Length: 120
Image 1: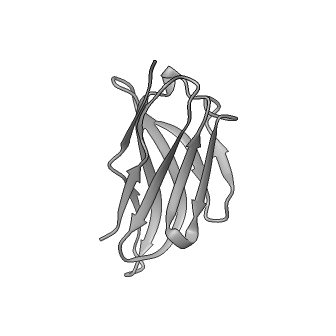
Image 2: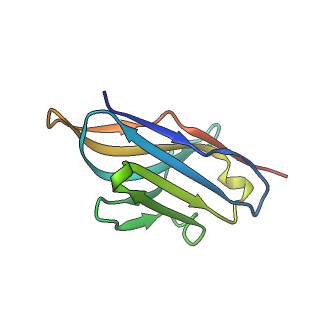
């Protein structure tokens, strides 16, 4: 059973920083692209950042220059370093990944989310 678990969310003041983690576990053969999404109350889930298995990255314009996505393939873990946080960054943050399991089945997985609240 493959699963993704996010951690690192919390309450932070405007201008502060947080580092989110997304750890994949289970019978994993390979992990492809990994992504972060976020969803604020009453809004649709939106793309934040993406990193390929080779380390290529892209970001939504709203976070470019403030957020950095990275991954540790040896640990099957992805990170999102968030700096200069703004109240509008408040949302549940979710990770998504393409994972090939031990039966060679390729599926898309979501984590359960971690809440980030930016407020003074």
